Every structure is written in structure tokens, then in C-alpha cells.
Length: 74
Image 1 (cartoon, rainbow, N blue to C red):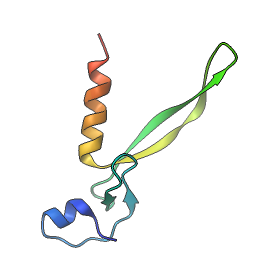
Image 2: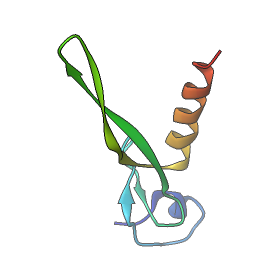
Image 3: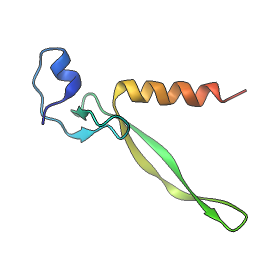
Image 4: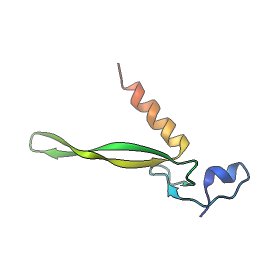
């Protein structure tokens, strides 16, 4: 499988990851590694787990996720 973002620029690069949101194949240059808190409903509340889970995204999904999280802040 080849990196989707590299193909758009005319390059052929082997993919090293898959975007966890849209499923696009990505090379090491184009993958954005982030973290996501794992939450679980426990009794009457929630529990978060440490360490947080790894989340691999393409640049488009990473940007969209970042924009959504900053819009929620006052």
C-alpha cells in the first residue's frame, strides 16, 4: 500500500500507518501521532485510564480534530 498524501504530489512512498479516522494510508512523514484519553463508565461517573491511547491521523483529520477541540473551549 502507498501513502495517499504522497500520491497526490506524484511520489510513491510505502505506507507505514492508516489514519484512524478516514482510513487513508500514510507514510512516516505524513502521519500525525496524537493521544486520546480512554474513558470508561464506572458506577455513577467516569474513569480515565493512564496512559492515554495512541491515535494516528492524517493531516486533514488531525486539523479537523484540533479545530473541534479548540471550538469547545470558552
